[in-house]
Length: 260
Image 1 (cartoon, one colour):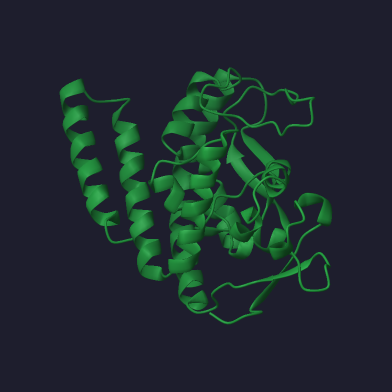
Image 2 (tube, helix red, strand yellow):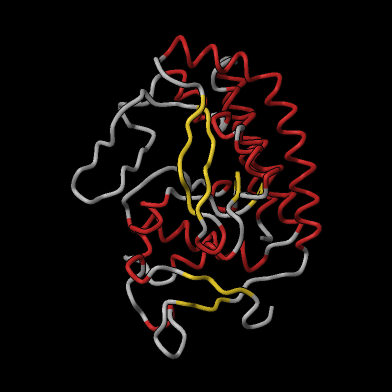
């Protein structure tokens, strides 16, 4: 990696003001190190997996749309502005998993949903647990807003919230956000206000950026697929099979990630 490969421009109000966010003259323009090598291979992988994902989406969309419609009034898709590479903003698409609502937060905190949120309807919980709610983001991948693998894109307000509280949190925006990532396959996903959990996610995001290459991307995609299968089996097999399968998948995942 070389210095000054990328310049990340961040609004000063969104960062705590520590020196390592600024260049020497104290401006809000901050230079980070980020890898350029392998960009073409990563884009080829993104397009290949993205097209496969969109084809899969074409077949499952009617069934998921039906499930959402009979579970909750409102649109099938949920659109939200999220933080992308270098702090840019983009519209992120998901299958809607929560009842249509107004933000619950009126105290200056971001409206962060977690798995216990009462606004999530039952079928929405299934979509979240099986990662099927993320499938529309293959469109974001094809557009170039996202990559298949990378740090998960935070809603803009949530990204700004953590920018103000963790010195190097903005460094996770050095690369395109991903549909899945190292933090997700390690079990760190979903909304939280817990500082310890968010710092662990940041640590894994930065580790991914440091070691990012096509080989590791394929490994993470594979492990994400295993997690999807494991989650789906929770809804359709008996306890003995589920327990045996969950154990074998967990052991295999740990073996794959042992050298990361």
